[in-house]
Image 1 (tube, rainbow, N blue to C red):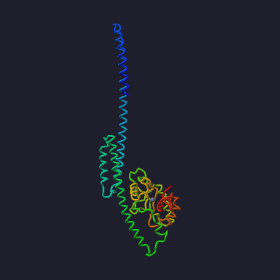
Image 2 (cartoon, helix red, strand yellow):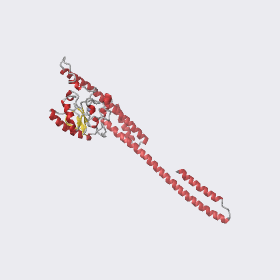
Image 3 (cartoon, rainbow, N blue to C red):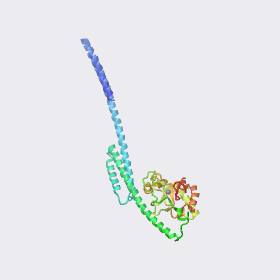
Image 4 (cartoon, rainbow, N blue to C red):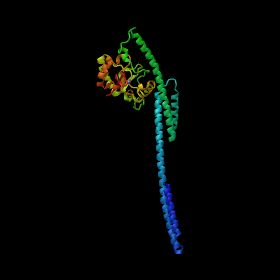
Amino acid sequence: MRRVAVAAVTAVSLALGVGVGVQTWTSADRRAAQAEREAALGRVDDALAVVHADVAARVVEGATSDAVGSSALLTDARSALEAALARGQQTLEASAERVGDDDAPRAALTAHLEAGRAAAPTASPLAARRLAAELAAAEQAVHVAVAAEQARVAEREAARVAAEAARAVRATSRPGTPPAPGGGADRCATTYGGPAFYTSVPTEGGDGSNGRLPPSALTAVSWTRDSRGTPFYLRADAAAALERLNRAFRAALGHDLALDLTYRDLDTQVAMRAALGSVAAVPGTSSHGTGLALDVPELPCEYGWDSPARAWLVANGPAYGWVSPTWARQGGSNPEYWHYEYRG
Ligand SMILES: [Zn+2]
């Protein structure tokens, strides 16, 4: 742009020089030449004025568009930092007392949050991007610590449950009588061999994605809680349908439907995947993360493959929108007699 303007000035100057050079210097001509020269100078001044105005306009325009560009860059970077600060704070709060003895990842996240907040008002785009990336890494470390602690707790709980189950089997088996083939406890054989995991509470500040459902998206069922006193949360419509199903179940079988797990948050799913591998859904894809799945207890065998309770649920659940998915049935890709899903 600026090169074009300079070339225009140069062209005008050359035209003037050539014009002056061909004048004949008589006295009449001298006056005419003088007039011509002045007129030419006037034209040059006019041309220069136009070019200067043009250059000035282009400079202003360029500066403005540069300013707009860099201010958009800065706004983007700062809002990325603000978002990272908000997410980091949420993770810090949600992870309180959930990382076991090693609080270092949370301390590091706290330090990054403080540094980020202090720098946010004046950070350059580059600095804001760097702080946001550091915050995300610190936040991820806290998620890993939470998952590791959950896995440790679950391992301890699994050992306790296994010991209890072994005691129960010893107490109920008659010595010398082998279990009937295909019956009794065998019918509760499960593909699941890992530690126990518990149902989750809603995710404060959750964004509504799988495993991050906020309290407003979930409703607790009315008649039961888990062994630790945690209510069983489901998406509101699924919970309402299950209330109706439970009334019919109770009328038919004489007791409430037992639950083992409903909503499962992302941290728990991450811990499950870490503990169990491909038997557990990829974090972010579990139907428990959407509040649309429930597990009944695997043990004792009350809800096993051939149990009256399962027969009732498979036959009558669909009238309430609750089904045993094909994949979870006998012969399905991942048989789970305890798992049901709400399909509306
Ligand atoms: Zn399940």
